[in-house]
Amino acid sequence: MDVKVKMPSVVVSIEVEEGATVTKGQNLAVVEAMKMKNNTPAPVDGTVKSIAAKPGDRLKPGGVILTIE
Image (cartoon, rainbow, N blue to C red; front, side, top):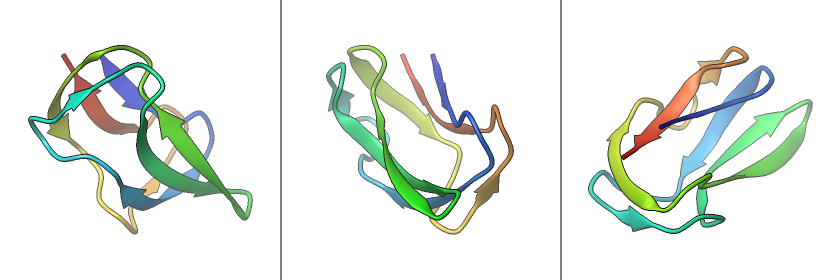
């Protein structure tokens, strides 16, 4: 499952590493949108398969931060 941003955002930090086990609701990343920092929670339990973004990346709506399997 891809974890995506809902609005234009800048990635502030990635809080997990590839291969990490995550639980639903766990914070995965912090993004800034409209001058507000927002946590990005895990939508499901799983393992981080890949990280597509890094701090400083600008993402358009629907941009993928990381993938959970």
